[in-house]
Amino acid sequence: MIKKIITLLSALAFFSNQAFALFETTYWGVRALGMGGAFTAVADDSNALMYNIAGTGEMEKPEVSFMSSKLFTSLDGVDWGANYLAGVYPLDKRYGTLSASWASFANTGYRREDTFSLGYAREMDDVLKMLDIEWVSVLAGINFKYLMTETIDDDTSKYSSSGFTFDLGLLFRFEYGISFGYSNKYLTRPDMGYWQEDRIKHTNVLGLSYYSEEIPFFKIPRFTAALDYEMREGSNLIIFGLESKMIDGKLAVRAGGWESQVNFGLGYIFDFGGILEDSRLYIDYAFGLPLEVTDSTGSHFLSITFRFP
Image (tube, rainbow, N blue to C red):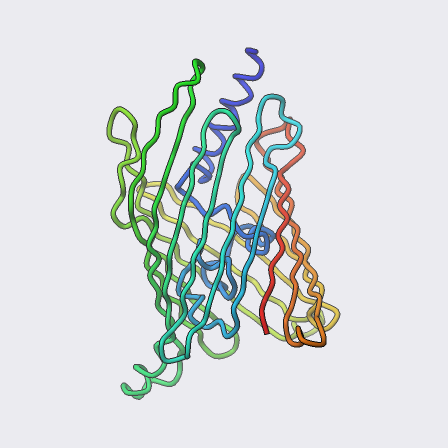
């Protein structure tokens, strides 16, 4: 029993100290996680809801995605898991894009956190055209969130708390494959404490990414490099990520991480014909290896995404 408690506390300390404290980071989206979580300036699929809501504004087709995971495998007494369900529905380009998601982060029998979000994003190019600005494409978005947390103590008593907040996002697409993203999260800093005030920390993330159809000399196809700088009330974190899509873009290979973890990922795209022509099924897997939890064999993430025609 003592060993289980020590192991659990070690895992909790890891999350708290390495920017994976509950409600204080984005631990969702298998493609994004395969890139270490450096996704603020990439944000071009349904993972954008948890990284930079502005990115949904450029999506042209509806998309749904589900992720499930097992964290800290092989650690005795630790049963952390994360689930993520998201849907994106682009309206007419003049009216933007609607999105919704549910994210759950839990340790069975101890604690869980749930985030429900409803987002809206839009391209701002028509506004820029009125200002005679054509050297950059800009997207903006807002994501409303309802947060719930529950803790169960040793005598099975339950304590819960909830609150509302919202995120703002901006995404700038420049020429030559360069993008810059900004995400402003938990603006209202809701109080999620049970007995005393415990506010979620306000978080700002700056992202930079570069995309090339092929890297010269190395011949790496459909290459993306991304970097995020996360600032959370006194603590900063640098995250990097890489992605390359091969075999006509069907097979994706990814890597990334930060100072205390390395991540790797794979993805494959299945195309359909017939009545489902132009639709796609994405299967993605990511593996995360924490460098400071030595007894763990890592975390595993799997997602299925369907993009409608």
